[in-house]
Length: 117
Length: 113
Image (cartoon, rainbow over the protein chains, first blue to last red):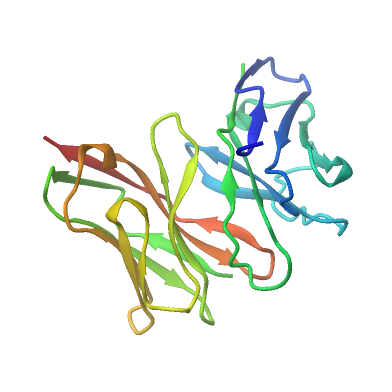
């Protein structure tokens, strides 16, 4: 596609329910990132996928959060037993990351706004 | 760990006057630095990036930033503000160990007519 897409754009759920957020990266991009934007914490890194390597999960705030990337493309972020503090905008980004540097541009999707009641 | 500090949470300017958004970074070596902009209800968009090729970096929409190692700064400037520049601006550093972006707290730019 033309850019990174995310679905749903908005999600309202009840405390304790599980939610799944989806990200479709730019075609051909090898790296995929999840970030969270909340009022109290600003923008923070959650998890990073690069090719077939093991993901970097160092930013996940608790074991209720998990993510997978199937076939090196689409990714799903799952939050189990949601809590009110999980309310935030969840952003996905992708980049073309052939090797070294870390200077490649990350392109962001529009985000999924999650509200936990 | 690398970090960035945005010195102003809000900046207000008049249309047609210069813009200065300040950012200081903390890094043990030469970092990769970025400025991203986020318009209301829109996604994050890259304005410009510094990757050690040149200290003065030009970006989109007339913005530029200068990397000053001696001052550990990467301030964003624009000679003349436009109403459409009103948005939130984020100074960002790459944590090269993880490749994840570390964001500053953001500066909300308001442009008065």
